[in-house]
Every structure is written in C-alpha cells, then in structure tokens.
Image 1 (cartoon, rainbow, N blue to C red):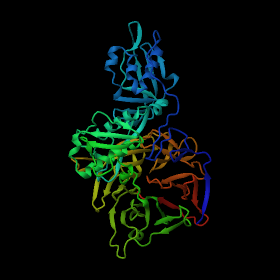
Image 2 (cartoon, helix red, strand yellow; image 1 turned 180 degrees about the horizontal axis):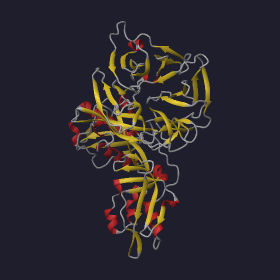
Image 3 (cartoon, rainbow, N blue to C red; image 1 turned 135 degrees about the vertical axis):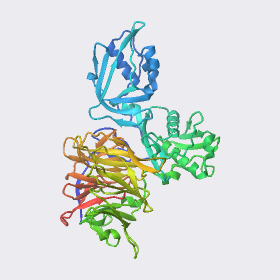
Image 4 (cartoon, one colour; image 1 turned 180 degrees about the vertical axis):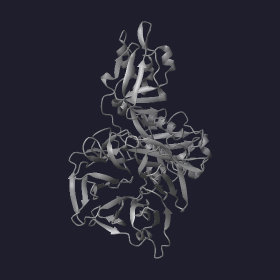
Length: 584
C-alpha cells in the first residue's frame, strides 16, 4: 500500500507548539509545559457609578463591574446597603450571551434575559447550560440618598461570554487515581489577571481543599485533612515557595513524593517551579531544593507509554497491526495470527496501553475474548466473558482494566469491568433512558467519555462521567454525567486526545472532526479538517505523539500527519475496510 496526500492546511495558528485551526471558542494548548494565557480582546474595567444616571445605566454598570471578580467592592457600590450586604458573588458565576437587547425596561425594574452559556460553581467547575436555558433576572431599583441603586440580590455574579477569557482561565488541580500511579486533572476556572504570587496561592489553596464534586471520591488527595499553606505562596524568579503547616509532616516518604507531584504539576501550568517545605524543613530532603518538573513525569495523566502511538484495527474481522504511519516503511495491515484473539472472528477490538494484550467482541456478539497479542509458544486458554445484546467496543484504562458495556440496545445497559487480575465486577450506572453509542476510558481509569443517543431528541450527544465508589468503597459507580452541550448535530463518534476530545459531528455543512475542551467550553475544527472524505469514526488517545485517525463513511482510514497533511491507505490496492483503534 502507498501513501496518498489528501489535503494540506495552508493557514495554521501555532500556539506553544500545538497547531490548531480555530473556528469557534478559544484555542487552549494541550501541552503541559509553558501554558500561555490568551489575553486577546478588550476587558471591562470596573468603575463606580456616576451621579444622577438612569436605571438602564445603573444596571449596565453593575453588570460590567461584577464581571471583574477582583472588583466586587466596586460592584457593591451599585447596590443598596442591604442588597450589598446580602450579595454572595462567590456562590456562582452565570456566563451569558451578552447583547444590547439582553436588558429591557419593565414596570418593576430592568429585566435581564439572555441565552445562558454555562454556570461556574463556587469551586470553579464549568457546567454547560441546557439548550434552551436562559439567564433571567429582574433588577429592582431603589433610590438611596437621591441616587438609583440595585435593590435585588442576583444569584451570584453574571459574566458576559465575551469576557470569560479575559477574566478567567481554566486551571487543573491534580489528584491521584485510586492506584496512585497517574494524576487526574480536575479543571476549575480561576481569575487569570492576578500577580503570580496571588495566582499560585489561590491555586494551591484550591488544591488543598480536595477534589471538586465532579471527581469526588474517584480520586485521592495525598494532603492530610487540615493541610494548609502558611500565609501565602511567594514567588521569586519563577520559584514558588509552598510552606505547608505541620499537618503534612505525618506523611510517609512515598506519600510525600506523591504530594509533591500534585503540587509541582499544579504550579507548572503557571510556569512556576516549586520549593516545598513542611514546618520549615524540605518536604523531600533527598531531592533538590527546587523540585524539577521532570522528576514527576512518571505521573503524567496523559500516560506516555510508547505503545500508545501504535495503530491497530480489524480487517476482514481479524485483528491487525497497521504499520507505516510514521513513514519508516510501506503502509500495511499485518494480521495478528499467533494469539488467542485470532481464533474467533471479531466485530470490535481493543488493546492495552502497553500494547501487550487485547480484547475482541466476537462477530456473533456472544463473547468478549481477552488474550495476549504475542503470546509464547503455549499461550493457554483465552479469557472469555459472555455478553448479551449489542456490545460496544470495549476500552482499556492505564491499569489494564477492561471496561465492557453490553445490553446497550436494551432498557438497562450493563457496564462491567474486568480487572487486570481477571476478576469481573459490576459497575452501577443509570443512563436515564438514553442509549450508549460509544465508551472510551481515560488512562487514569477515573474519567469516562461517552457518545449517547437521546431518547427525547433522537440525536447523539457527548458527555463525560466519573468512576466513583459507594457503599463504603465496596461498589463501583459511573456517575457525575456532564453533557458537553455542543453546537453540533449528527455526532457519530468521540475520543480522548492530547488536547482534549475529538468529536465527529456537523456544524452547518458536512461532518467534520472537531477539537473540544474536556468541559465543552470551547469548540474548534481539528487541524486539516474538511479534507476530501466524510468522517464517521475516530481513533485517538492522549499520548502527545499519537496521530488522530479517521475512518470515513466508506470504511477507509485517514490520519493526520505531523505536517498537518491528511494521509490515507491507497484503496486501489484493497477495497477491504479497516476499523482503526489505538491502545486504550
């Protein structure tokens, strides 16, 4: 088989080493080193009310002032003393589509009615609004010393969507998965205009509060309860000094290292190195005083096993390795004939992140078969798991747990996990009448990505979920479902990617591959989009060197090379279709 160039992107925006072609939303860098802030646009500076202005001007000024979380005292000057005292802007921030017609005058005051974009909770969690959800509030006015003031208390703060990226930035708090071998990002939105010392202090304070409800008990914070920063986190020449109180002194050596990893990774996104002390002494006395970020790379949440870049697939219902994507050899599909997976015809195929084992759903739909890809001369019996109804392609996490969702076309889809020791556990979940279409686990084994078919709208949508435990840790549960609320239709697939999530769906024209942030706050075309084929399915994972692979509506595969050219297997040599899959 030969290479064939299908298209090349002529105009590319390069940001911190990651190339993207934006059409909507804000470009957010997927790399962990040297994240840069996007300060484009014009911010609104909070100003106190002028004397003798009208009702509309008072409410407009109030909305402008509350858009700056560092100037809530200025915003309170627009309110009556009673309202100012009762107002709790930190409770939540409602992001809305700001437009001139958003404010209208009524008999009772000034009415705000606008399209609601999202709600940012007290911990900074971004929750997209429903498709018809509105930002709706009546600002009642009252005269104080002859001047109009706002007398009604809003439910938190309001923020126009055009001000979000000027005022706030998505930041990750890092916690550990239950096996404590990978960090899990917990994204929150925090003020981005703070001086570096204040920003570092706020970030570490949020980290020490523990995970948000979205991750809950699905992750582990190594900091013992009561661990605090002593006063603040000063920054000098790019080094943040994190002085913890004596509570963290009770940690064992290994746990001290894990806590250091949480802090170092969390501060790295501010381009800060970390010096960590407990009661005045170094947290890690045997390590350099300023801890190198590279010393904690083993906990990378993107899981950087080299095998993750290897492409696999099904050709003629048989597992294959796809070689030649890197240009080192001719592109070809090499059958895996020596292992137990070759003994049965397959309808789907999954591979461990290490690339040493895999699982198939048999073509008859009755079994999931697990086995080594390149077994020794005596491979033994394969592991078989009975399944019922429609079974989605299974998914591995970074701990070699195999997640299996069957009965997908029934009233009660069933989710189970085969642990790396062969034990099979039921996973409690509830899809509320909607039908799962695809399931992809993140390497950490905590976060899940799903494509769902809505019973109400008859459209597919994308959501994330979290693996947590109930009943004192005895029962595993998939919950905390978070629909991404994308402005896309005809969604056919989604997969984790190093920069977020890749979604196949339609905006206004033909189906395209889209790059989406993990909370759904930004949406943009994947580099090299709009090539000469119709995308239908995507294979990708979080490894920074993995090339996204698209299967088109004719079953042929195409991948995005590092020079942003779409490349395909030449179907002149073979009309057979390939179902691509990466480890994960």
